[in-house]
Length: 62
Image (cartoon, rainbow, N blue to C red; front, side):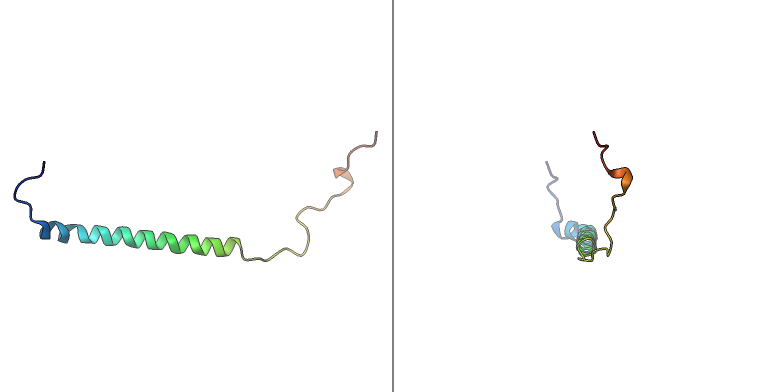
């Protein structure tokens, strides 16, 4: 139960910095996620394949 002498204005004033901080962290996380998504999907492809097969990659003839 809450005490009967609650001062809501004082409680709002005390919680405001915390709520602003939480909002700032969420905004920062969103910006980081968007930047990461653009960085991962930038569309650039390497000129050469990642792995080139050679004679050691072939299966032995039976």
